[in-house]
Image (cartoon, rainbow, N blue to C red; front, top):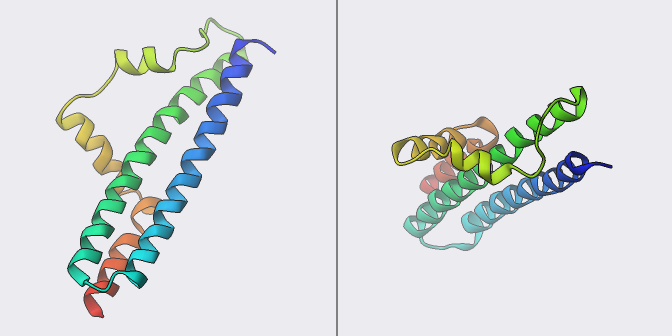
Length: 126
């Protein structure tokens, strides 16, 4: 195995770990609805957990972008240099409003957003 193979294995493991962490955040959101007696606090916690999941999914997306580059390099064997995740990201790192837009975009993805408005509506209805 060459360096790209090793990088792919490491990135894929981390990508899956972020998926597990996102699921844990969703489970915490459900727990907050059930266990937090104060509706205002429950809504605040849900908003915070939604934002946290958006951040996790944004980080996961960055790993996914690099995975696609590595897979392309493995497929065609061109000049993709291994172990460049952070260097490439820093070269194109969004700042300020663009970074916030990335987080918001992640928060509004259906797979992220789906439970939070429903849970918030449930808290308000109770």
